[in-house]
Image (cartoon, rainbow, N blue to C red; front, side, top):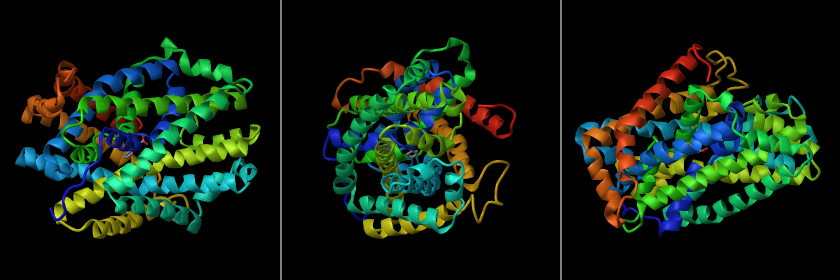
Length: 451
Ligand code: PHE
């Protein structure tokens, strides 16, 4: 390594930066519509149970691997066992795939901030507005470049001066804004029905698919199985309590997802007169349905602007973690200086992101079924590669290096309270569940099963 590895200054810095990575578009846009689709309260309950068992074990393992080796994914696996560096290689491909398309969506978010601040809210509530926008060429590319450029700026500033500083500033604001908008949304006429729908479990809607959907969301939302938490763990000081940090990150991530549901579901209910269909729109919920909802609210342009600023905060802290992970892999491997690596990663990501940005316009003929280019990248990383990496990580920790070596790292600062849970999850339950997710997402893609 050419430069000394930097680190987060303390526990708060670490927790907020890791939470910044975890809290992202997945929490604000994906979680509410999944919750609505899979029966509201029952989905919430399933998700929370999975987070404190499955998610907890995997996140502890990844952060401990990172801290123990002081390396990013590829070298971390290699240091622990030479034969298994291939897991690190696969893990490293994931952020390389996600960063470009995530930044394309991040660009859309900045566009919507400008729409709401610039007073064109009513135009954005039109049916074709969003489709017209993403089918363009220069406009979406411009916003994409702005988003990824801002991400690169923070990453260039480094772990302490860039990532930690911005997370300490952004994350508390994000929570405050989410709470404010959630309260506003719940007090609208007709919103209460939405709150009930969201919070009261409907056991009739519970099925195996609920668990699968919740588990898929958990991976994505907690940024696990893609080397990010290994990289952040490598910047964590040895005297910080790892177990309680993981718990705090989880509370942060789950609370923002929960609040996002409280913010979006009641508002959409109030707007649509209690029509659940309006929520099931999936991806277009945030860019098509919500602008209509804001347009119908008193003070909607201000709330809308605040909402998209908040989404931007959530998205940029996630893209920073993605870029940092890629930068750290490249500089660990090639020994380049930080600035040079950042520039190279920035340019590479721009090149990879352009096709995703153009997938509804110039390149709209390239698709597989309904999948555009962006969807293909999303599917390859989230539904295929992430479960594979998670599975390999469990097998690696459970049977190759043995849970003991991870537990030792966690116990550097005292007793590991949930040690038994950790061992059972990593060795048995998590691997079985992951195989099920993998099979079901393949079946889903082949059109044999609907998730
Ligand atoms: N965890 C982030 C979210 O919930 C998404 C993310 C995925 C971030 C991959 C970084 C890497 O949106």
